Length: 303
View 1 (spheres, rainbow, N blue to C red):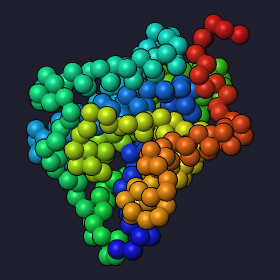
View 2: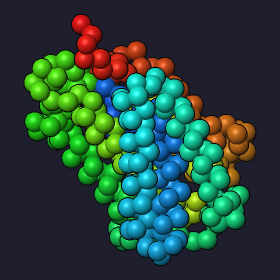
View 3: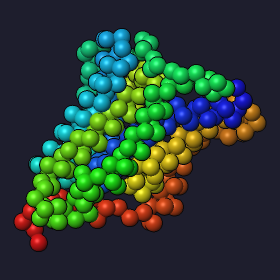
View 4: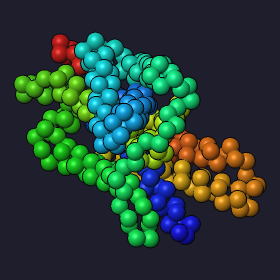
């Protein structure tokens, strides 16, 4: 394959986990809850997805387990932030720390491994796309279809109208007889399912194994994609593809062994996706306007 074709294939491989996690962030924040726990939810999805796939020898079971684990983590975050009225930022950070410690413990307890699951994980079904080679088509299809369906849901359905309204003007939603807390809980749980599925794609569709560092900051890149995409499912998808392009580019340059790779320190290439994330936020965060009630706890007695 040519270098350009290899780069495109790499982007299509790296983008789905970030895109689905970013979709989860959009679903949560459009309902008025900041989901800072995307990194931890992806970690839960990656571990339980790989574990279930190894136990069942089925990548489909692994994907389902990753999505369910993400949904459970999202429900925990929702319970803390919505019903217990914990600070949303603190609750998200706590979830990330819980995932870091608990998954490390489970690796050692269940598998006797401190470094990660190194046995091959059953690969997702692939589709031969001519000159593009073999591609994890389920991951690519999920990356394209789920944000499109979410965009239609939010824009064209009564549920989507309420979903957006609870993040903009929850008092109007409550006046219409809809439970603000119930709808927000549903939204954050759905956010967890999407991010957990994105996490499960990392071992099942991208690397073929679970590593203890996974997802290695991709949840935070997904948060940046939410802002960069202006809280839109399709915008977040575009931002995720952009950041995946940076990841693929640094791998292509550092592995090519060319003059540029020889002149520039390898650490700079490894930091390229994160540098572009910071530059993107520095250039666009001031122009992006979040939902009016994003991060604002619901108090039915407030005026």
